Amino acid sequence: MRAVVCRNWGGPRELTVDDAAAAPMIEGGLRIAVAAAGVNFADTVMIEGRYQNKPPLPFSPGMEVAGRVVETAPGVKGFKPGDRVFAKIDYGGYAEEAVAEARFAWQIPKGMDMTTAAGFAVVYGTSHLALTDRAGLKPGETLLVHGAAGGVGLTAVEIGKKLGATVIATAGTPSKLAIAAEHGADHLIDHSAEDVRTRVLELTDGRGADVIYDPVGGAAFAASLRSIAWGGRIIVIGFASGTIPQVPANILLVKHIGVLGFSWGTYRLHRPDLLTGSMETLLGWYAEGALKPRVSMTFELAEARKALEALLGRKSTGKIVLTTGR
Picture (tube, helix red, strand yellow):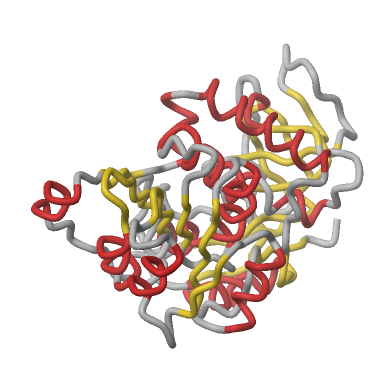
């Protein structure tokens, strides 16, 4: 099969597209003929050798796939060859075949195409559990979302609205803010032209945001500390800016706030019941029409380098997806 292969730690330029052996079947597994694979910021960290789970070289990146089941392990129920599925895996998604645990695979709902399905699990799963299980976002609270037109940011806007929050979106261009507004943001802040703290305080009558969703880090995190309400919660999702912030503990004390780390992938190990329950909820919301996934760029498998460079260059909104032609 064809696969994108990482043989040396580094950036996208280190990747090659080669013939590779198919992954062995696992207990409780599904073999999937991959039609599309989601591209995530974590993939860029993994190929640099900086991800928390460091695969042995060589390997194929890619944490989420969509395609058709071609084989099931003995005893697996609920799936059969030919089923359209999407799945969360550790790595190996940038390939024509992938093996996933059946418990972390889901039937693709009617009306959802393979490209959309490939980009659904990570971004929606992240925002849903971050805002419900970790932050405890309540109806009537104010949610501030940084990077609101990005992969996870856009889903946080949608889910925040579904949970009954007032959503303030930040982004660096008017066009990106327009996309956040299309997905339900109540208020928009152009951080390249406006002071985030000043605008948040204006929009909240001086109180600040109750929950702040931060996949950016760097200057966005500094703005969060200045924009948060007393007793508020900052959810650390990632560091798309490339700068990992340091947290001054005196501000946590004085403002009576919490800074909460979040890693969706670790739920597979520690709380798989919450992860699978969350995905069922999200698929129900999709069926209701409450979620409108956005894929702004697609690339062929052989163009994985370009896809990752587009992600790192913040050229996309919503998701980037690789396609295999299957």
